[in-house]
Image (cartoon, rainbow, N blue to C red; front, side, top):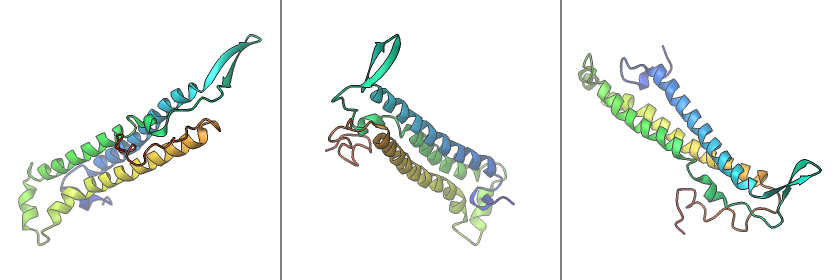
Length: 175
């Protein structure tokens, strides 16, 4: 017996769906961080100038140059986690409609002495996945903030590098 079998509809390919959910969450986290890295390194590259010295290309930091503020580098970072969250919302409808397919297990669910059995099988895994999306979003922002802070050369962070937290992290400039 599989560990999460009681949280999926009867006859549903739960193991495959669980692997797909975990893979989607991991891929969304990784792609979000790669999106941040590409934006960050493009902004960091603007801090340097290249010169040809003795037939060698030398990169030096430009005095007084400042990297872009952190919130401006977050464009599209959360996109992949939002897509996974939307798929998990769709999974709620899929799990419910699964009970109406085939052997009509919806009637069996309605006859069980535990009235909440149907909704436990429909909602538990998608809601746990949505909670994981929120947690991963927070971890992704923390990882991006740490990378931004410690990978930027000393003295090249702007005065208000964090913007108006947390509003800019949520997707807009509200303050």
